[in-house]
Length: 399
Figure 1 (tube, rainbow, N blue to C red):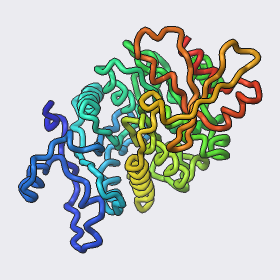
Figure 2: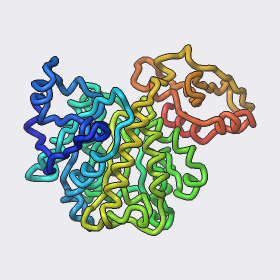
Figure 3: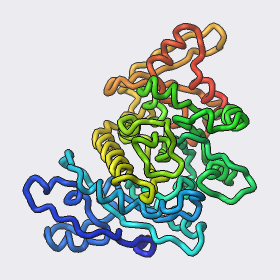
């Protein structure tokens, strides 16, 4: 596919870092997709192609569905200004900046273009980092997985669920309903991290439970931040709404409030996401430079991306369904359950998984979803003759 028809260079002045130290800034490490030919001529090497990279930065300057957050389309280039100034600490980072997506005549045209670009990147095994724009772009990101007929998990860091109403047009507050109702449907599990109860109606909380989706309140997540690691380790797609960060740390969003994650906590979550071998795309949404104070939110999102890259560069290919010999197996007997509960502990990282046995294993469609990321606390819960909540929800989905 010729991606040029969907992409245009970012509207930025060239970055000039001439000192020996400044050569390690990301501005001098990240390659520009629109200048790959120039790099090849300068270095007299083999022509670089998109497939030679592992991470791709993609801006989506769209905000027609942002409702009260108009101006979010200007976020991608603002984030780049701060991201490019940060230093690289990785010797073998292969990252390309694709520039910005050309927005279509209609919102649906933009979705289609984003879907096509995401599909191409996934085909080439290149992980996209999307900078929006409104969070409903997650819907187009999800559609990019359709050609692979792959069952996926989505994790959203957000203060609300964005369920909206099934009859309304898609927007930044209704994209999740569109994913749930879309056919064919490839969504296996959805996880919300950090919802604030007073911003969510009771019926939505019950619906999440009825669908066996995972939702975690802001207070319980902040009290045990390390518990977010298995939450994001189970995701194929991570969607991060900047409004989940408290206003004092990220003022550049119309929907941000006095409570939310701190900037440091947001960076911890994105580093966990980078470490996950399963995660294949991530998006940052809701940032609006119009409301930002001295670029503080753009700077924070740039640092979140930096931490994601740091996690990605420290991946160790820790997936139990690929390397079964690298795990210690624990069988736990439960008085109320006929079969033993099976836990796996990685010899490499010490991370834990639960093994769920679906009723039908004629195909490998659900095979990766047999292995549910969990914690040592889940194992201890099972040892106390109790069924961990993660295990029960996954079992319901696979029945």
